[in-house]
View: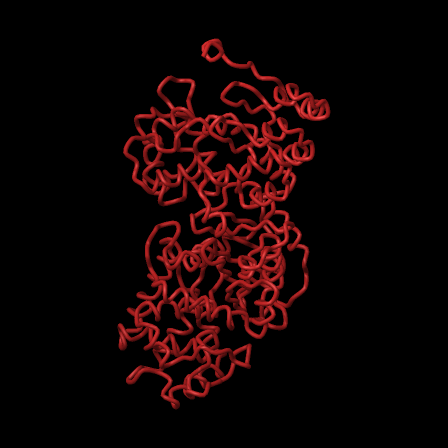
Length: 569
């Protein structure tokens, strides 16, 4: 397993980042989001040279929020203005060593909206997961723990490059395009039956639900491993996730070029690449030929389907079988697979390119069928435990979708008896438990021990209303409310219109338990309000020696107080 991350390093990094950015964050509290972006950048990332901004700090802030500044296509216009033009040309020029340390703020005028949107989401905490560093640290702890699982068996058909018991990789991509990767996330893995979910979504988008479901049903099959011809009461395969259903869907992908297999393959893979953020994908020819040479049962299923009129008329059976094996043999990595899954989570729009690829109906239908039978014979148990649409494959790959939030792609070759990756299953279960991702957690109140990432409830509240509730909770000692908003991603250094923080309100109202809770969250105990007063000033004024001692123990200091002009007013 090739991961350079460690839990200790991640925690240390987060503390350093927190200290380094705290001053810029405090500046942000005083800045209107409606101001021109160049004015915001000039104030927050002011360089020693007048009229310049510190590029290193800007890119660091973007990366901390989960946006890959150098790689994200949406940020390419920004990066183009930061390049040292003379070093290199072509795609190789996009690397951290070819970026200027500072640039005139005027160079960043008139950036496209895609750039502005990401920068403002980063600076003002509007990304799906605002506290991304904390989220990443939790994921790393979970990743390392799951890596210790040694159960499972590697299937014989895997290539030698992916037959390593220790291979373990995860990538998560949010619908905003925030990305976290760890472990063997760049190893190419064939899609195998994960292609069934993607193919079904493409077929629905191109041909519509009514036509597609002339050839495939919508019910669960009793044969979970799918290696049989299993037809429903309408004499069609039960659903698109089983092998007979996947073959029926493959036949529909040939309709555009019924007698031209290369064009059909190219057409489908082009859509795969768009779903993956315009990343190039290729077929593993060795796996393709090996699968095809050892699949007598699949050939027999295809012939039996043809006998039951399971394909559109005049379709070339050989082309159907060839395209089926070819699409199963397309290689992705965890990183490209996660973007594909995130596109499903984002209603068919790729989060890293904003390309609308699949219809919303196609996405809804696909996630429903993934719920139904995406995990072979384990689908019901998976829905019970994790409650996430997912598609597994015997290559050790699992794609998981949290609708409206994120897509995940996990890879580890050892499989359980149901054909699912043992490590990927456990990581998915822990994710759902830790972050309340089960689809019913959004309708049934989740325990406070879960960090509910869903923003559905928060989305109904304005930012002003959230701040009012947090300040009221801090003043009245309601730690449960503070914890809930913190777990939704709200910083406890948030300020009201007077730049007062929850810690200020706790100190004014003698709420020692709230003060302890906030200190445990590493809030800024030296934050100053509009009168240049810190929480320590408030604690001293209201005579709470216990809070005063607590604050001083954690590095709090007094503020300079109002300036003379303010005193006169």
